[in-house]
Image (cartoon, rainbow, N blue to C red):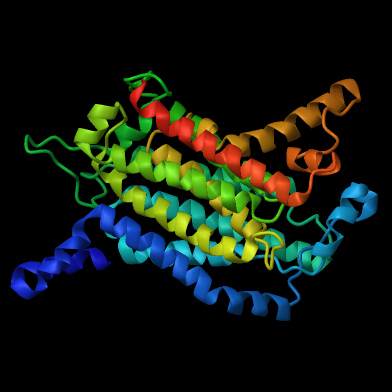
Length: 388
């Protein structure tokens, strides 16, 4: 908890420089750099350890994916489970730079991150052990995702500073308490200046977990090419760093018409830590990849982003900012629905990045163009701040 170093600043003039540790902007930048360095410095050691454990990514056979097996044949043996680097970098950085001891939002995000990471780890482990792409059953994964999503949302929904007292309440000069439970119950949509629903009541506990589960699986579907999911996470986390910082500061929030809660500002540090960790991971994951994040990384990243969107009350905006993730998940849904109802496929293969591969696009071209789309989606999302 490096934040508390600023308390020593008043003890001596020579320690005045410690005041910077109280500012979220400084700690957000430091969290980004810390996460990046953790991943880069430990990256090769973790990759070598994964190789020694023979944790190679199982590649689907020609019987399963036909021509795609030829395109991805060179990936055989590339270690997976690299998501431990991302999650490890994020957790170390957040614990060092964020005020985890005073913020229920961070507790909720950490809960979702840890459980989805463990779920992804088990999925990767089973794939490696069985030497196929089966892994944990879809029903089991969905159940665990729904359970942890419900638990995290219910924690924020029920949290009452006066009853539970884990954290000191944030109070205005007039004595008003900014209640986390009330913040979570509001429903905001892009282009509207006020919440469309001021109190969703128990519906919030039923609706909001869907955001987490959908985002977790969408990122998982996107993780099919070298660096694709990693690069798209960079733009999404950067955009949400802006949203969370604005939401945590009254003047900025009122000027840009965003939902305000003073504790939301600390979520910025989680966003920048995720950005830094993914930037470091891209060092090893860019084409041709030396390591894959696996479900260990993709499920947990999606869970993080979904929970961050809920804490900042920008759930609907996630569909814009994470547009590539929506494209990937949507292509799978459309493909399955079309095949079951009409007996025909819309795409040569889903998720949609494989469709373009089978059309003859080089893998690097698909990745780069999807990264460009991700940047555009993030900019569109940020642009909505002032046109509500």
